[in-house]
Image (cartoon, rainbow, N blue to C red; front, side, top):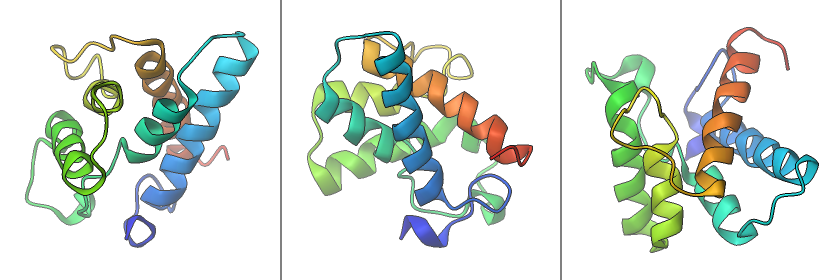
Length: 125
């Protein structure tokens, strides 16, 4: 389903999430960080699991609200862990001021999401 939604530019949500997961692992590897690889992979891949096309949605505060929507969908469909939920919930920080990343994995996904979004938006990939 994520392959049918456009994320940034002409990149699908699926490809964006895959790119965020890869970038998160690359940053962790380059910095020699000890991480929960399973949680990082699931959190990164499900961070935008909100299941609607935000470009054609009446939802005006998508940037602020989609992390919680994605987290609830992931809990419902995949039974994710608390660590994975935290990764998803906080990936839009600092836009979502109250959802500060509280784990290495969440910080990695938050940073990787910004890097990937910039690359995709400005067609740098």
